Image 1 (cartoon, rainbow, N blue to C red):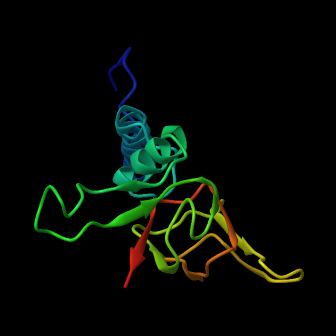
Image 2: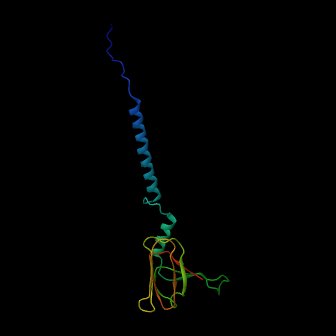
Length: 151
């Protein structure tokens, strides 16, 4: 028998190597997903980015009712839109049925009070809120998308 200073190579299991490769791929995909989310500016929720941008714009907009160009300047009928704020129906905004122009977030709150004591109607976020405002009532809107008068 001859002396071999190098022992034979032991058989290595491929299962351990395969498992390590799979774990490495999973970690790499998680890192890439996190980087993509950070670049997109996401917070991990499934919120529509257009809605988030509009919510931010609504909060920073002035709390005054706005109208499209009046019928005197155009043949198209004007649309009344009401943003966050407090209004007297019949003075600041016309009476009628109002509906949110976009899906309301969880923080959206609207309230109609008066004119008689004890008259109260209100709603909290979600969906497309709708209410009917009557002359003399006080309308309060907070953290909601604009409401548009529907005839």
